[in-house]
Image 1 (tube, rainbow, N blue to C red):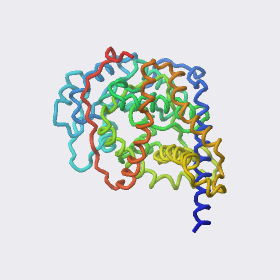
Image 2: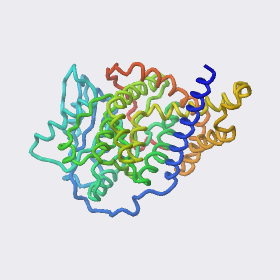
Image 3: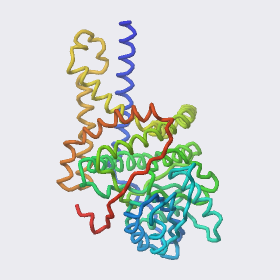
Image 4: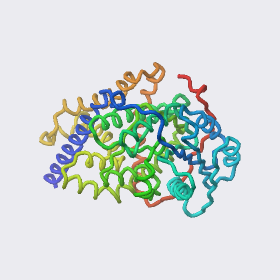
Length: 412
């Protein structure tokens, strides 16, 4: 039993340390500037169908529709369609008042954004006018005026699936929203930007996504899990289609204010990630091994996103066990990774967050969020356990949005 314990402990140390170092090295490319400045710029040419997923969003949808109606892009090259999914409020009426298409859908069985988008795409393909590309937003979003210009450039430069820069619309509403903001600043810089610089697949984020219409018709949507963005990303990578990232196309997304509502949202994410991992992780990993493709290996790791949070938590736990308990005093041969390496890794992981905030030129008040940010990170541990062990619960729960925020309200 002692020998078995030693072997397991040493294996865990090596795995946790190695994969964390691998992810850390990949993230270093995020410090380098992206490709946007070197890519060819194009005049407006592509036409867009903008889909807005909405379920009882009468309190927040008007600012987005005003925003979309005034994008810096030729009006004749895009149309807005609001998917009024099982709405029982004034979402459809407000959409009509703003001069956009209100597409009402009622289905008590196939609930959720994935099913709503699939239904809308089928309606879209039946229409007389066809569009070059489809863009998807959530009803609580706001969008930078240049968004379609950036997507037009990406499409004309040969990309078929593009993810925009996800920003937090309400970062200073609470310590929870500020923790979300810090997480997304990190993800944009050290995950999305880094992988774009490495030439690896980027990951879709559920909103601010752009798809080539022909690709959607070829593949079909078929992404109806609780995390439709993760599912579609996996399907793309398996087909050798790498989503890319548009740093200058910004989506402002409202985040939950309370820890309770955040907990509920993130449990849903983990359930969706777990379902997608069970379906796509094995084929991605096996194909990555056969082709020796690091990009697909990395995509497989992201597919089960809880791994990333569990590994960060595991690094902290391993460091505490090694430095703060007598366990390793009695069993020195368990120290397969030396003390200094665990200390250095912890420091490097934490310093990434304030460094990203510095590079992104975030205001001084945002640094206060670093005090409670570890609490937010640690909360992923119980969330992950609950999400994994209840992954068969596929009930879709709507995140309630209540603040009607406009661009002029977002002052740092």
